[in-house]
Amino acid sequence: MSAFEVNTTPYGVRVAYKGFPDAREVAEMTIQMEKMMPSLHAGWGILVDMRDNKVFSQEVADLMQGQITLCKRFGLGRAAVVLQSAIVALQARRIAIEGGVIPIIRFIDAGTHPDWEKRAIAWISRGDDPET
Image 1 (cartoon, rainbow, N blue to C red):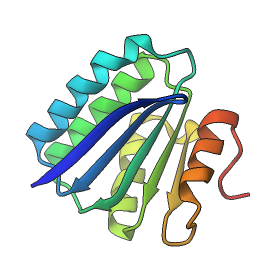
Image 2 (cartoon, helix red, strand yellow):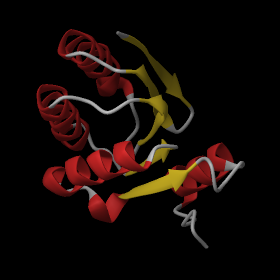
Image 3 (cartoon, rainbow, N blue to C red):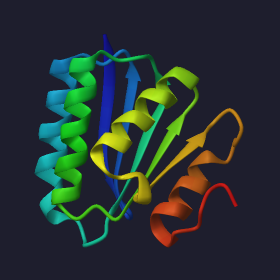
Image 4 (cartoon, one colour):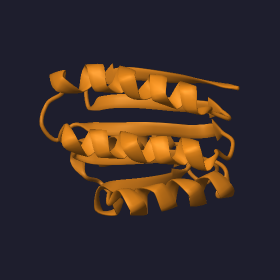
């Protein structure tokens, strides 16, 4: 079991998955996200905090793919995903590739970059690549 958070921010949306999310939780998160998206400005961004995430099932990965589609439909500009697990990073990259968001997404390793939040927000807000 896990927990999640969804919040609006000045740059758009911040979500956090914690633990091992199940399909019900991801579906609930998607509903919360969909309710807030109409009020977001064009080109809004999303910070996805997956530092405390464990690997997820294919069913959950498919639901996360749906979240990407939803975000794109509502005008997502840039996304940053913060990770700490190599396996979760591989899963997140696969979902991003399949979702067609590789050009607008950056993955930040929180273990390598203690200033991960600053880097993520700089990418989302201004397009400053977190790896430079």
